[in-house]
Length: 345
Image (cartoon, rainbow, N blue to C red):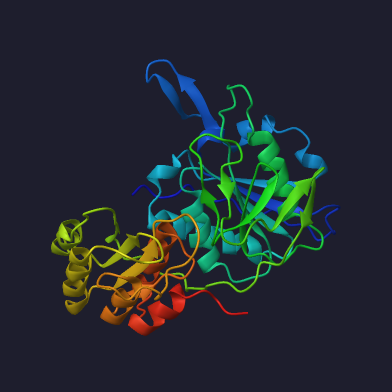
């Protein structure tokens, strides 16, 4: 992995700043894309300064401190890079002159990256993740509006205690529930279990509910080989067994409905768990939680009796993030189960 570009120090002044100060971390993504005729499509090409130049009006919202971290498609992130960005977020927020942080990235993995940083974020200052669904040269470019809205949320006075949120298409979504629900639609980001935290109306954050309790993990590492196996009709245990044979650190099963699968898939999971591989039971449904209401062979109750860890309302992709980071933090079975469970108020 190439070392991340060095982040500049935040310029501080003994005088009180006339407006809120927001650090904006630029990492690439659609908002940075330009069309390359040789490649035949969009590629990252615009740095932070170029994006800011395409975003008029930011200076009226907050004092923006840009940090460039390169031009990386969101699908190319690694956990190590996300941890590095998480460290930079916390370093920026430790400065008493900084009100909040905005991370600008590609939208493909926002539902994962924002959750990583939410698990790591310990303070009350806002962290906002945003991007664009259209490139700057394409009709309907939404990046400038999204960036202005994200900075507005990060500079909210007083800031609402939200942890990490995603701001896209005027909505404010919690990192532990937000999902990308459509490949290209502007309103793709939704929180199917709990709904939006609020909206940005005429440049101001309007909150409709509190965030509630959050999961937390220390900054550390992530287990590199945590795999998702999706259940369907006649899905047996071959893929799960193959993952274990390839030295999987953990497995997430995206079961049908509230946690039900064919018997063969559970049989393979039993063998994995007997060998010390933790298995988390999630649902392939976009919302809802897994449960123990069905006790037939392969039903949710059968999985839990066998030792699988229910994922609560976490979707399978977020359960994978939590499992990888939990294993990396050295959590045992019981503490992994606590991490996966829905936080209590």
